[in-house]
Length: 105
Image (cartoon, rainbow, N blue to C red; front, side, top):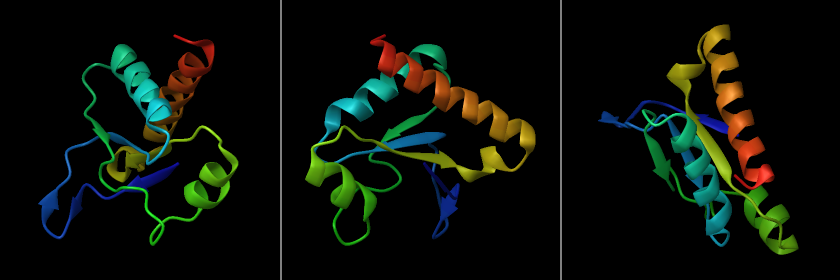
């Protein structure tokens, strides 16, 4: 789980949360579906604001893909995380979405 800035190079990044993937497209799609089912007003990016690649990423290529592990890198816009209340809210959003994914919902 990482965070990203709402503006980069003077370009607004509208997503509240992004799921990054490369080979395992299913896990990110299922997490997106869980988020949008519970929180339909959130803007969800797929491979936004970044994409997984060998030159800029280490964990997914090295630890997940080489072992055949399901994975999704989660990015949350950091202006949502500036307060304790925001951090709690986003922890709940991510936790409930992962619970849905693991529960098969």
